[in-house]
Length: 78
Image (cartoon, rainbow, N blue to C red):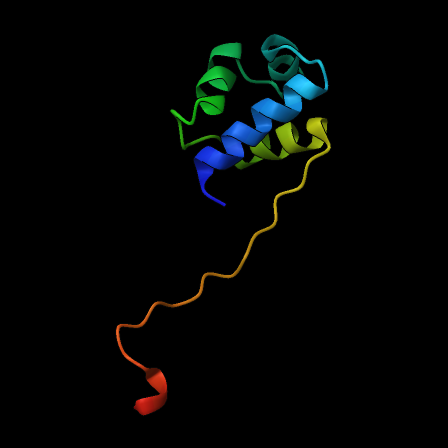
C-alpha cells in the first residue's frame, strides 16, 4: 500500500473513532501539526515508534509484503 493511502486510511479511522487530531496526537506523543501533515500525506518521515503507536491507538494493522523483483526479461530463459 502506498504511503498516501495509509495516511488517508489513518484519517478515516481516526474520524470513525471520533478522535480529534489533538486527541490522537497527544496519545501518540506527536504534535497535532505533525499528525495533520501525516494525514495529508505531506510527510513521509515519521518515526517507526510513532507510526506503531498510531496504529495501536486506532487498532489498525498494516500488512507488509515482500518486494518482488521486476525484470525486463524472462528469467526462465536465462
